[in-house]
Length: 59
Ligand SMILES: [Zn+2]
Image 1 (cartoon, rainbow, N blue to C red):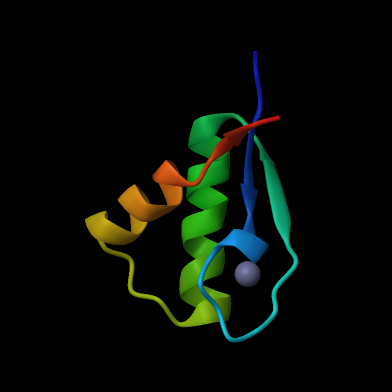
Image 2: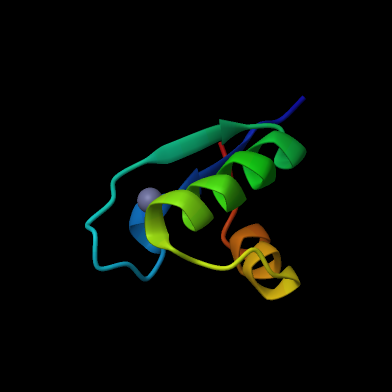
């Protein structure tokens, strides 16, 4: 199964976060949303999930 990558450097952030999350799309989305909420103070909204989903890249 192809893995997806979410690179936190691509997200607008003032933290200079360099985290990269890789896995299946569902896994990456779940972890990336949690990370965005807990580490970056975002709210868990459908818009946030959409934004993250749109930034996923194939590994
Ligand atoms: Zn981050």
